[in-house]
Image (tube, rainbow, N blue to C red):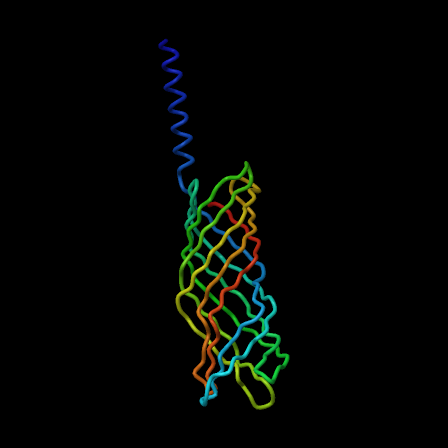
Length: 215
């Protein structure tokens, strides 16, 4: 009986040690890169008389990526992230005019993120969450026709938020590769003019592949 009691105590102590080790948070760094899903962006162009006219910038997918550092426990992740991407403008329309262009804009953001994480198998994890922070969007001067510099340059800084979900595959005890989708809301760029321009509020997605490593 004494030996059985000692054995039970030893097993309980071992289980407590394993649980304590599992609960200890770990630090990690990571990076991800891919493309955004921007297709078009409407804007109100104000020439200073009458009602502003609605224009549109047609876009093609631009690069998107980010760097992060954080802490992870058994079912949670908390991180700071820098995110950036390219806005590729290929056509402007302000009826009755429409013209192909080649313009490039940028967005940057800093986020504090929080995620719920779950282990789906020995090597596969899922994560879902979001973040809030500060963002800036900048678009270049874009001309339409010979004498109409109607679009920009426009920029805006302010509050930003994002939602994210993804899957991670553990390639080792310390490292994982991830596939994720991010849904972003950034400030709407604007310019005083003349002509004044105010782009509509825009939410868009981004698909990225990532890599993270504990340290």
